[in-house]
Length: 435
Image (tube, rainbow, N blue to C red; front, side):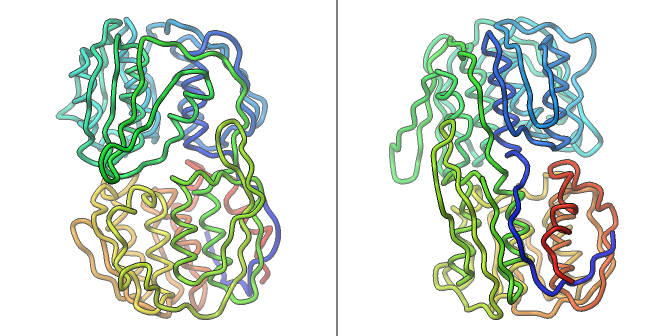
């Protein structure tokens, strides 16, 4: 994919349905006897993987464009073959929690990238609850032998992860008693919000400092409901960054999810003196939804809010998907940004730390790599270059934005990987750039 730097970004757009919410809405609807309709379902390949796995478990699912209808059921069928999660770690981790509480045996597998990603953080709590999980040294495929008599669990997450939290909560639906998850750093709370929307009581209590205790009492079944899914704020982030960094740009992104656990990227952009604001917020199906307005500016100041350009480690879980993009933004900021405490990035669809460092250096940027992050100097001039997506959708999109900020043309190898989360990315981008 060839990228030429545009003059500016201008227009009003929508982005596809939120990927995180779409995964969860489909899974919960599948467990809610009766028909649930999901509006604005994500167009991503990842979410199609979730629907494919649910179909293999006996669910009747109809889809027309972004409208999905699911006939939920209390008991899942034993699949006739392995459940293919493709590239979706979300599908594998959250379905593992669901399968753990059913009287069946199922294998969760995926592509080469997913099979290389460690799953020990979901295996441990599920086995403590009474399920059996066979793996290859903690990696997929996972052979899950469920147990309808799961034991409730008090689980303290060693590393903040919304997917691990969701896995345990989904298992807790079938456990007899109170299952709790302790998280030291806040993670996205879409699972809790959706379970409550589907009439499953989930409570969240701050027990000490920033430690949150999330609890669910089982066994309990969701009640079928319709869900309107907001636009994906993580997809919108790429356009927000591009417009904010280009002088003369004006952009509005409509109908975006602005859940407080997902808007840290916007807050960080504001702390960098960028003109980004949220307007017209309303509650839709237990999720806040609003519009994001962006005005470009020429030069950025060094932000005191980032503690001399060191990104606070407690913000990492709320920025995990946007960190490669934030590293690109850092090249345009006086003083740059140091990102540490983010070792989890090495176990995503690619090693996102190594991928980000290599591409930035290819564009002539000064960047230092650490086992748990990177430090980017700034401001720096980026030069057009041949870049690699490493088969990772977020790396492809982040460096599309970097290429738009560079001097000269760039070429991104493997740009089609954007279809994993945002198939319409280049089409939407084309509609708002002015050459």
